Length: 142
Image (cartoon, rainbow, N blue to C red; front, side):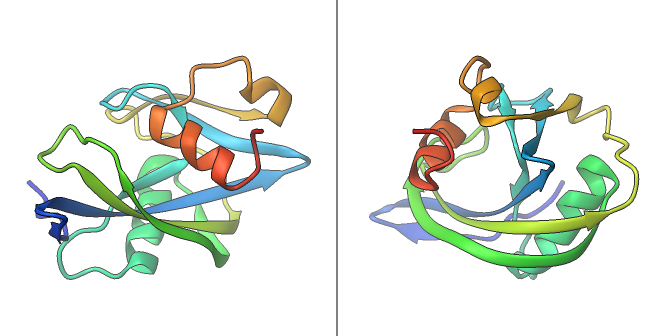
């Protein structure tokens, strides 16, 4: 079992998350998770104790999609009140614009499937609740 990096924020537990926005040809790579929170979302995951955000990002992209980061630029970070399947009510989310290489191969125990979506297509699918909020903050979905 992984020990996730966490702290106290406003009296509650806050986890730390790294996320990858991967875009190709006007479409975003999203995965459909097998575990809560359900819905479509970019590749993302908790930062483990002893990791930094970049190391967690590298690990999550490799684990969930079998891709390797060529370039990652931090584009957004914020503490968000968002429940978790683990104990915690806040997440400090760092979102990176990522250029990647490799052939996608999803980790079947965590990911049902993946697909590339335009923003118009994203408006018609079930997006994870946190990502509905983040896509609006990032002005990807308005």
